[in-house]
Image (cartoon, rainbow, N blue to C red; front, side, top):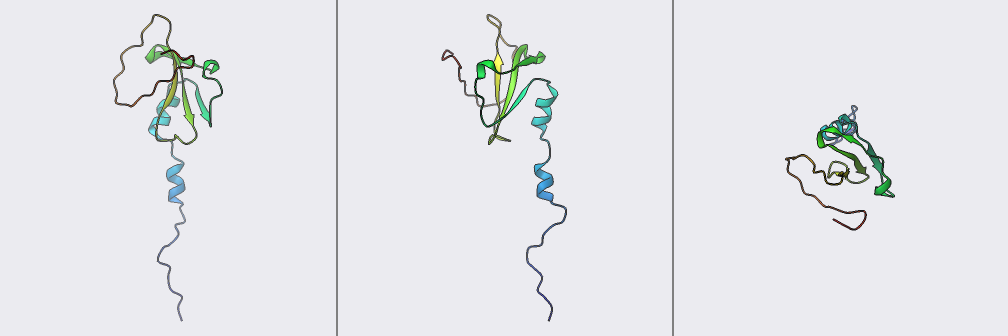
Length: 104
């Protein structure tokens, strides 16, 4: 008597694993900027975070890639020099502003 074939067959190429190991276009873009990218579960003190020169935005900045937000949202720290505005930027997004010293 022949053994019945399973309805669901396992794949040997691990396609799901290959999908999740890809580097997203967003990750490629953030890495191409050359500014710090901080990863982890939390940031202890935003005021002492290492920032880098973001030439296009004319400011000091860093990206935050916190566990659980992968592929969902973006967080960044931007230091704006006193009395100096940032250049215009156009794209669609939803923002939340949090001030580390309580003043917006």
